[in-house]
Image: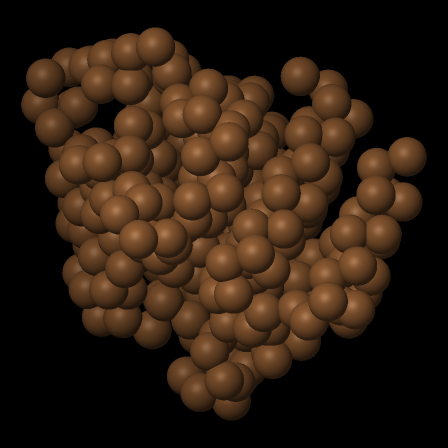
Length: 273
């Protein structure tokens, strides 16, 4: 797909996300806005997946380690055909399978349950190692938050991935510089990430996480180094696409009121034109 086509899909996903959070009265809207462009490039341009065969052994895997932004993944999966589009209206409702964190038992296309931060990358290392042991060509992608990288389990996984030369593994850090209640710089500032991952033996690229050409190039098979896992540090904005949410820590976990909802939808509709 062209960057323009991907931008159009991502805009539609953002609008549905805002609507779903407003209707449900809950959601992690800021981090969803920051990761949507990355998810769109993966599912509509790069990853080999089949909504009619979500458990195909040869499929590429995506682990959304920052599982609190599950709604963005659900909407992407619905746009890709894994689940019905009208099911998004059940988000967080009683007995809905679309919970606040993704569950692989219930939702086709979800590879593993995530929620407690710092678990997705270790699991993804296991997936990538399994593909190596079986000599299979499929790839594993994992998306973490930048605040999530403060978890020590991630750095143990980073060491293991380099040791096992997992060049079929791609870690994408959603570097929006904000976490719940504070800026990354105010808590445990791990930035810059690139030199740290390089020191651990990873191939690292730093990109604009809202530039479709840059994202698609970075996640492709053609980029990387043989024998090295890949890390993409994607510089993003929390609340991207909505003026009053952008780079605003208050929108980590907040629901727009009616006036804010209307403004957000109007801005996204204008951007779609």
